Image: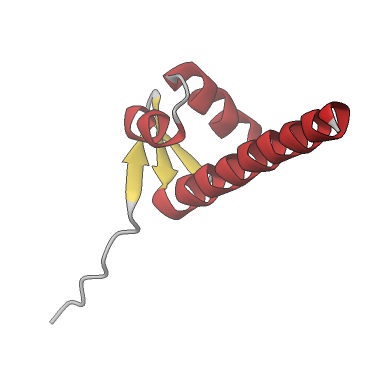
Length: 79
């Protein structure tokens, strides 16, 4: 009997772009730069789902921190 191992969960560039709210070109650039767990298959990239989700969480955290910093700066100006 052969053991079949589950393939790692992967996403297409378009799926990752939707999750990250970025263009497909930005996702491809991130893949080329090594910012995402990516494997080039032919002319397309296959992206590691967890790496995409981790990046999405980091981007969301950074955006929230920026909003909070701007709010705090405005509150300081208004005081």
